[in-house]
Length: 309
Image (cartoon, rainbow, N blue to C red; front, side):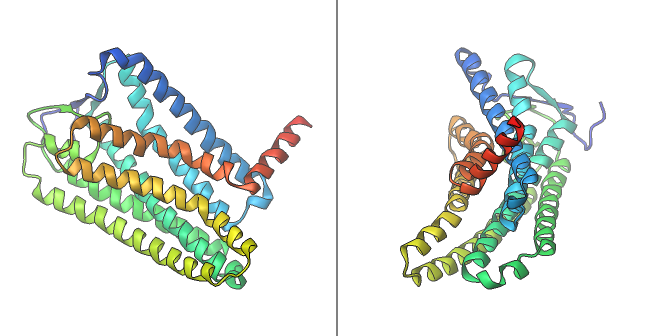
């Protein structure tokens, strides 16, 4: 097998949850149901937005891309996790680097998509008369293109750093996927420079996206406080509620995972937080935007009537 660097290791063993022998079947069923709900939920939301013209707006364009990213994110992580319960839980060096690349690509892209959604909500609430001009199809396309480009750049840096390292001693990854910190712990070369670069990239993404989201919602809050009518307050909160919940789940679980991984937390704690970050959040997002959204419920009713006829 051809290896991309000087490593003598040609494949890795993903420990994951294989040490929990008595829970293999329940865990397999749990992750399988989670994966099915994630795939069906995100595919359904993507199709609803595509098929219903009244959802062809900037906000739903961003939700469409968010669902696409969550779907791909799940497909990158969960199938390999499910396979570890029923077959040998090994992954080739090339497969591990590919999984790392796509994992980083979709995580970084989702950060920037959520940031673009915050800006979209700011314009919708604070600059409603300029909304159609400011959030034109060209602007929305450029925002998404920039999100994917930044995600690609971040993933290339993370994967490039990892490929340059050597893995010559242990091939056992104490995780259910190829993530940055578990791989760095296996390297038999100095990882100081790689850890610094990875930290800079992650910090840059978090700081830029968090700053824009914070400023956007600070301006939204300032605008809401000037609204005297209860109907205006309700409309503003309903417009932003789903996005705020999504941000809290994504950033909260992601930051907890990163901080726990960087600290001396147990492997069990790290894996639990990672499961929430990589499996639960992609499943919840389509539910959040469906259950809390009248437009989506209307689209569901129209689509069902169309299928019935």
